[in-house]
Amino acid sequence: MQQIDLGLPTPLEWAVAPPDWARDGSAGLTVSAPAETDIFVDPAGGEPVLSAPRLLTPAPESDFQFSARVRVDFAASYDAGCLILWSGPRHWAKLAYERSPQGAPMVVSVITRDVSDDANGFVVADGAPLWLRISRLGPAWAFHASTDGARWEFVRHFRLDPAATPVQFGLSAQSPTGAGCAVWFDRISFSASPLGDLRDGR
Image (cartoon, rainbow, N blue to C red; front, side):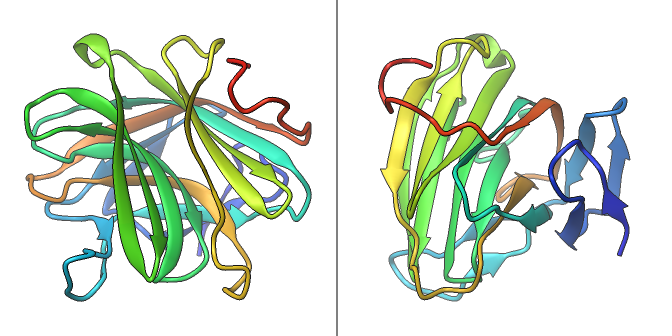
């Protein structure tokens, strides 16, 4: 499996590879999500859907922050580019820049502990680029999003199952109801500095 160096502590590898992707400069990536691909475990029942491309690397056990700017060629409902935490098919979380059924680009978070807990965040004007960030805080995790890469809006604070397999983190793209979509990830950043206040905008 090809390893991809995006300036993180360890290279990333495709857990589910898309048919079409490319490097975008030295620290960026373009991913085409195939049609009808998703990562979701419907709380109403059914088998997990785990078909969306995902690019992963092991998460450090110490605190860290991982962020990227995300742009999506939105076309169909739920088209999205995501940052993802992965600890197995029933234990994972994603922070998505996603198109709502009403056509609005917005922040969406999904926390999955056997089944998915799906929550909408704020709407992004005109589908402009959006920064997403995952932070590790000891045994917990935090999701934040930003429209300018400077001031961060709090999205979720949560834990995954501590008994699950070791956590990986990385990038994902999806098109659950559509014919596919292109997602661009750039300004990818990793910091070993611990996050301070969850809600102070930094």
